[in-house]
Image 1 (tube, helix red, strand yellow):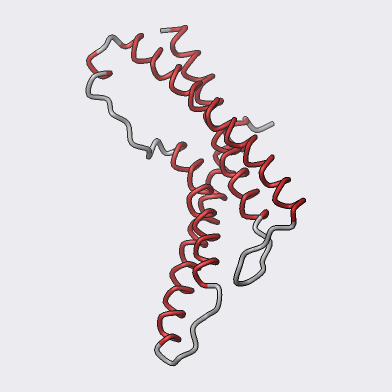
Image 2 (cartoon, helix red, strand yellow):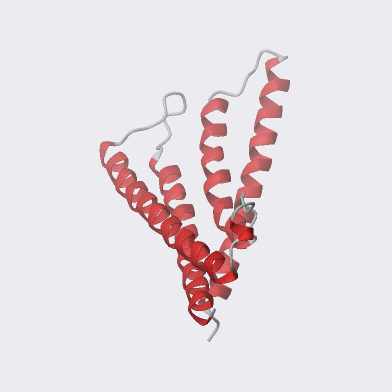
Amino acid sequence: MASPNKYLTLAGKGFNIISGIAVIAMMLLSTADVVLRQFGKPIPGTYELVGFLGTIVVSFALGFTSLEKGHIAVELLVSKLPLRTQLAIETFTNLFSFLIFGLMTYQAVIYTLDIRKSGEVSSTLQMPIYPFIFGMALGFGLLSLILIADFIKSLKRTISG
């Protein structure tokens, strides 16, 4: 049986590919809209679609960014501390981040259900918006799983010191 970390890595890479596709779609849509505007034929709802795709870009890239340790980290002060203290700070940071993104996941799911129930749609295209909010919840959820796995790893390293 493969380790959970392998599945998290695969999911992170898959979500990142979807994020990249969404960036390309945003670029193509925006370019097509600008070109077609020159001929008096703008694409209706471009602003809405770019916004929806933006939620996918950001939330689906979070997990892979965390796996790659691509986030911004300020280590100026922490790097001067003893190794065990550095590990303890890393452990705390992973736990705190997990709790924050776990809460964001939960709230995004609740919001998705509320918006779906209300039937809210976008103003121009009359497109349901709940799938994009649910996409955010998925991205936050994957990041939460990666953060709890990082917490467990860093806790083991802190204890074994």
